[in-house]
Image 1 (cartoon, rainbow, N blue to C red):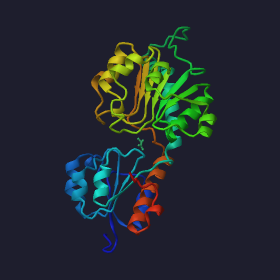
Image 2 (cartoon, rainbow, N blue to C red):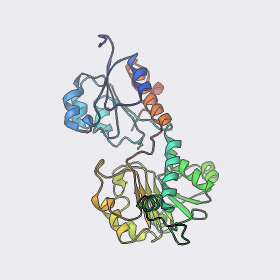
Image 3 (cartoon, helix red, strand yellow):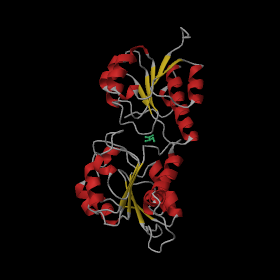
Image 4 (cartoon, rainbow, N blue to C red):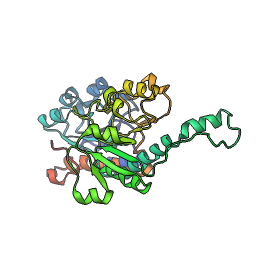
Amino acid sequence: MMAQNLPSVLITEPIPEAVVDFLSSHANITVGEKGRYSKEENLIEDIAGYDALLCMLSTPVTEQVLKTGRKLRIVANFAVGYNNIDVKAAHELNIKVANTPDVLTEACGDFAMALLLAVTRRFNEAEQYLRDGKFEGWEPLGFLGMELRKKTLGIIGMGRIGQAFANRARAFGMNISYHNRTRIDQKTEQELQATYIPNLEELFENSDVLSLNCPLTPETYHLVNKKTFDLMPNHSILINISRGPVVDEAALAEALNKGKIAGAGIDVFEREPVVHPDLLSAPNCTLLPHIASATYETREAIGLLAAEAILSVLSNKQDDQIPNLITA
Ligand code: DGY
């Protein structure tokens, strides 16, 4: 039953129970059906009565949605990346926006490492071979892959997740190079033994593994494209756990098919949930359905952090007491 005096919160997808329970004691909660609010028109149809929106990275929070949400005070994204939200429009309408950094860093670092190992050691191909009944005994030349020790991991986007990946890769004996909008502090650079490469082309040319850990912005859209695949060594591997549109997916499929690069580990896609058909049939690539942060612990922590931001706004806390507000 709806309590009259409580604010209303729309959660656009089913999320961990603990988060819904936590919010329920402070607000009237509606949880959307899976997929319903990935469509802008459905959000526009339903948003008007809500004071807060807890949305997913797949929820298009456009200017039109925000304008229709006349009562909205905060949009909290169940993700660190918030390219799905028109932040400028939200701020113009006096609606706060929050994201959920930190709590997913380690899960994403683990995942990037796992994906890299899966690609370089050809887990998918080898497992399929076994399941197809082709395994006839140990083979000296069966499924040879690239060793990580002494190879160079080039990271584009050396924020929290980039650093978590670098840290793990160091334990595997990799050398770390990186490019970032601004150079990271010297102490962290030294701890990670990471080399800053100001010139992106140089990073493409000299990385055995190139990892994308940057946000999606107008500057990073199709940052990896036909031209950059030409720069990459033929034996190199691309790892993308950031956002799909950072890579030109058609160019990636072509690079894999033509052997311009040796493999790819891809968790994010240009038009999720659609995957470019040429990528689906391309060799040596591990394709996963955007699950880098998918652990029980992390998904609950993400939800609780977003819920905390919502409750802070709804209880009129000052901005500096609201966790992870996006200010720019
Ligand atoms: C994020 O939080 O931006 C991630 O993509 C979730 O996996």
